[in-house]
Image (cartoon, rainbow, N blue to C red; front, side, top):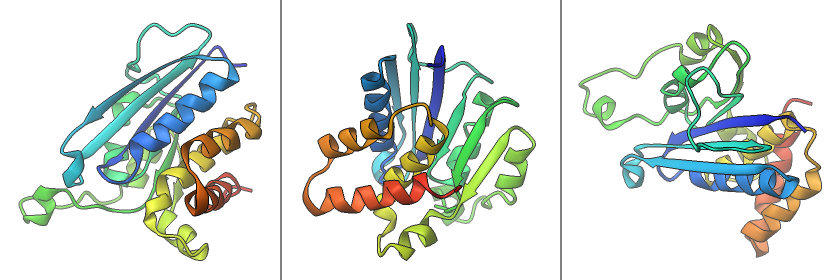
Length: 194
């Protein structure tokens, strides 16, 4: 068991950022860690910024991750992932969905969506880019399952945690056909890098 794990989840309102963070926090808690979680909602109902910090360890005192200290960034949208770059250091790993959701200023034409975000992030830390939309489409699923797909991808890197805990938490979170589809999305994310 690692002494600590610090994870940031970021994305836009409606992408399931909080769902992915809560699933991961519950998994870490069931694994035996002390866990703290914080959530920051922007205009979350209008595709605004949403980010969550999940901190786990033998004893955690603060729910907020310090700059340059995140072990993992799980970015459900690439610009929102890039906004969290101050929390990343050379030993961090960023798992980034390449989907672009234009913020209001871009839609209004007052600014341009930044180019080469993934390349910029690679100058800070290791980055695993993934086109979740196309990966989910192969399964007959929509972008609605991006959060669980990305949680599955994260689980690949948290390999010391028994995968049965992940499935147990998924079963507590979802039911019926929704459970089956979320398990399909989770498994696809978990196996993406294999």
